[in-house]
Image (cartoon, rainbow, N blue to C red):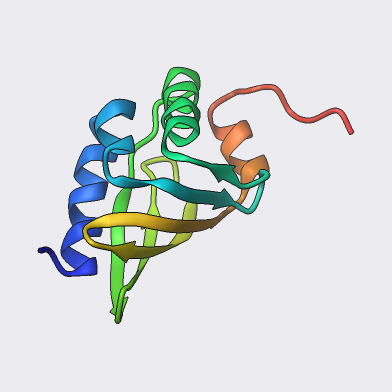
Length: 120
């Protein structure tokens, strides 16, 4: 069994390979991934689909700034090569992510990757 900190170090390695299948395998079947810019994504299959779509849309790299651990929780402070910063909270049970919440600036992400901006 990995500590939550070790688990998230592994998660970052898998994320940086842009492998949605391998990344989804790190989540519990009933996991919830809630990036605050979106509605919560429920279930491992839907999380896999989300990552596949995101990896197809933009080249993403996670650079660890800090990883903190508190019991079954790991907190990841990250940046990317373009300067975007964010933070993720991961609740880990039996070496699977049960819940994830992420905070980052979606508008900056879209601009940096030259993606369409919301029209609302």
